[in-house]
Length: 322
Image (cartoon, rainbow, N blue to C red; front, side):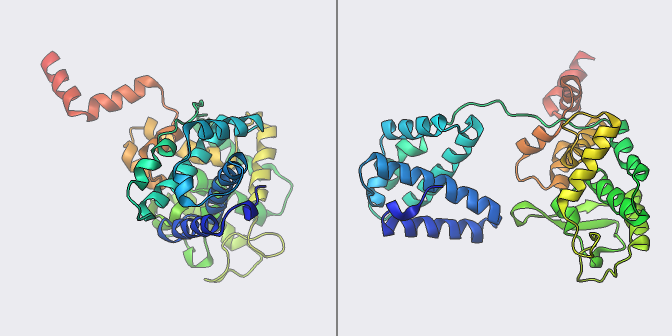
């Protein structure tokens, strides 16, 4: 792990101020902030060593193309994947852009153009592999075959039903409290980046949660976690992952059949049934439509159907051809 001891107080303070701004203005999570810090700190420390001594912010802006290439080569040599390096470069650019905006001396942005124009390494974006509708239903119903107390079976079925039926993340499902029970027809969910969205709740999900609440041996109040572990504390997400691992083994499903795959399946099955991509984006809480597209695994023919039905030019062409 890189240490900021090699950096000047000016650079250390700039990094600290930038991270504080990211946390406050963009509501980035602690995990995201730590990833930003790790990426930018590694770059700054490499430059300090490569240049034979740490410089100030003005010197940082004058980073050469050769130095950027040397840093990226260094990162790849130590085993960083193209995807991780692309993320690190994005963090570096974000920090540099912020620093250029903050600097008062003329031409700061121009001096930083070498950094800002650095090309990201290409990598193949791995698409999620959703379960089929039958597989998703089998996973949830298979929990009843486990030799465990009824309330734990009901709890796990309720959580997985929320992932598949509402498209929730594990963290979002486990963040529900007793105040959310009984589940309303529409849930207000706060997801990544502090973004809030409204999620319709299917009757099956409401029924599954209600069945769990009736069986739960722990008192559920407005202030306590809705889903509880065997000792009464908030349910650990690792336990849900293990439930999926056991179900996967019993049903002969592929390794990609994880709890998050149920969220992928939610999006894919909605789109395949004719759902609007932007509506699905809202339901999932994605900031970018491209992220939603990566969550769906619909064949090209289905996408062309959506295009032909929704695009005004495509519609006009169909009328003329008809």
